[in-house]
Structures are given as C-alpha cells and as structure tokens.
Length: 221
Image (cartoon, rainbow, N blue to C red):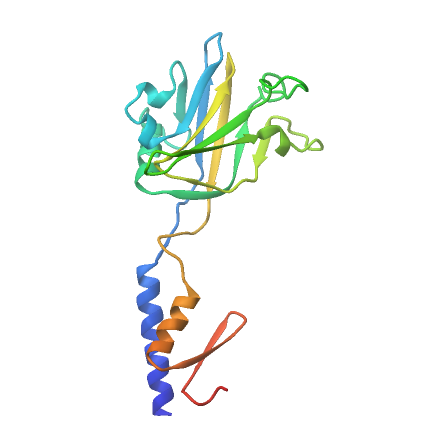
C-alpha cells in the first residue's frame, strides 16, 4: 500500500508541474477587422505581416482604411499586428463579410481576376517563402440566404512571418473575423514523454482510453 501511495504521489507531482508549465492561454473574443477602399481603383491589401510590413506606410495598405471593430481607437489594428508578432495564434476558421461580395467579388467563370482570392504568405527564418491561395468562392454555400458572408473553414497559424494578400476592389469594404481556438497552448501535453519519464523512475502504467491508472511494478504483465 505504501508503494502505491508513493507512485500516485509522484504521478500527481508530475502532472501538477507539467500542466503548470504548459498552461492554457485563452484568447477570448474574435479579431474583427474592416478594410475599406474609398478610391476608384483596386488596391493591394495586406492582413498581418509583422516582420514584413510593420515599418511600411499603413502596414502595406496604401490608400486603405483599416478599423479594428473590437477596439474603439485609431491604433486598434497596430495592436493586433504587434500582438501577432509577439504571440502567434491559431484559427480553425475565419469569416469574410460584406454587402459587396455578391457583386464586386463575384466569381466569373473564365476570369482569373474575379472573385476574392486570399493568398497566404509564410516565410521561414532563412527567408524562404511558401505561398498558397484560398479561393473564397469554394467555401460559399449556394443554399445560404446571406450571400454576403463566407465562412472559410481553414486552419491557419498567424505569427510574425505570416501575412495574407488580397485585392480590395474600388469603393468596397470587407470585414474579416478571425476566431482563435478556445484554448491555445504554450506547449502541449505529450503522453509519450510522460510515459518515458514514468518508466525512467521505474513505475508501470496502463492507459484505458483517456484514463490513466498507475500500478506498482509487477502488477501488469
């Protein structure tokens, strides 16, 4: 019995120490950004891009008005881009919304420049860039009643080396809503690592689905 108590105590101490190190970080509300083009020509627009566009005029968005709809101050977007450079976050999906989507961003067969294409750019520390396009019209449900909303079910990790490029049509606006995962981890619980560490201190374990039961040596064969 004393041996079982020792094993359980060691396991409890390990879990407490491990989860304290890898605590859960909740990001709260969605990030909601509005991009508005009040000119008579299409504009190149940039979302995020801490390392590439932080020092550029309007963060690479010349002639574009950007508002952080969650923060009522003119520096709301700067806070978002600074935060993305210091703390990465992941999303399972994001939303694009505008009354202009059914008209100015409508997909026209045979016209490669039509529709809303979001090109994701990721650069590694050595400067090598990886890009991939997100064809937003693919995610538009033909049966939905609200034609001005596109929910893009795409996993993305936003950090300082990531930005999204798109064309903002003349006299149009787009609202982007990014939904961070409810729990973003500073690390993750690695069960294999736990098992190896428990094995090193000479204890045995057994996993039943999601439950862990720890037994003294010799009980399990």
